[in-house]
Length: 369
Image (cartoon, rainbow, N blue to C red; front, side):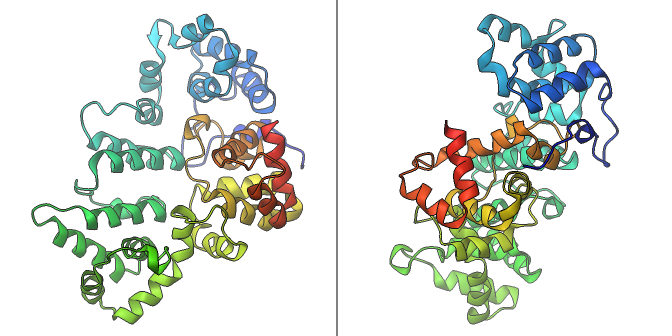
């Protein structure tokens, strides 16, 4: 593993002003300790710095509590949920717009659109993983029937999330909504939007074997293609190109073939969240970066949703820097626990991993011990 210099990694991203207190040793020392070790005392020290008015330390508390919360006594944890008599969620909301948008992730406040508004705010702040988490929550809450705001398709929402949304809009019924959903998808196809092709291919269930696709409304598919200026044959060819990406999310087999994984990676490599996998493999398996990423995608799918609550705000540390650190590597490997059997040396999944990349297979086993 290459040497990791943690101190330079704490620079704020170029699009944001530096967070107050980020250069203060009262923040830097315990935060670097938390990134490099399993010492829960770092959480206590960061809370002390937050009590003293260090904004960077305050913003670090949600992630660091995620890392060490289970390692401190419950009585101490209760104290950490307050900063100078103010609840942590409220203190974060007062300190930073991105923290305000993220701080109430599990609460809608009674307004479905809150999730989308907050996701947009997080995207604007460079918080891609957190923004997508809230967009997915909005999608779940609204069932795709609420209108999209102007400029939505300019946001860095990953193709897979937009595709699911477009597909769900097609399947929602009520009033004149089906026609509006078709028109929206046709507009995306006119622009040759990959997410649009993925959404239509998902609606057509092309990622499944023919015998498992059920009843497909081919006339509707052809109508959408015609409105977008494509023949059925042209449309089928474009949808076929994106099938590997759909198979990563809507899989029918435990482990995909390396060929399918590589094809999917080519479609997804530019998505912000995919960078966590690239960084992980560059750090953990520098001699087999592509094989490492291929093995991960084949066994575990897209690295979306890798516990965004465990990722610090990017105003404190960039995504690349975080997933290069020992803490980020540990958080990333926790995503492999979601597949039963990957942590057993004698399991079919572990054997399949090892055939593609032994380095990643070893990393998964070590994380389970």
